[in-house]
Image (tube, rainbow, N blue to C red; front, side, top):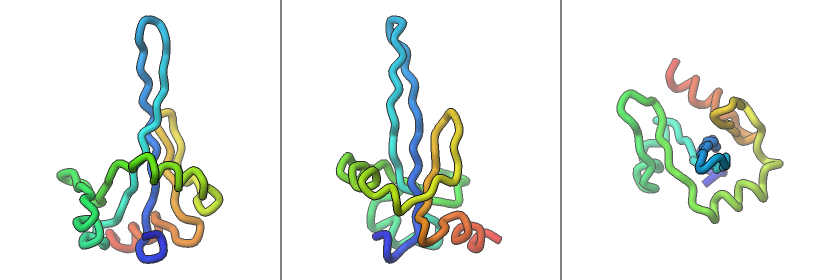
Length: 101
């Protein structure tokens, strides 16, 4: 998949508080551009109304793959709500911006 299309990985931080104990969990998801509509549909990615990209939650095996290959990704955005990574070899941001401009 990573050789054929350009994608990004998002990590959403979920903070839960239960009986005075804070628990943080991370949800991992892949992001595809509208340009890759066919691949997105074949792999059951979803497009929210008004959004110009597709997303799909990652299975545990994909999260493990991502974590094992973090040297292939660079962090492009980080906040208290989460992080976004893109491939070092192919910028999702540039790929996507070229499409929408």
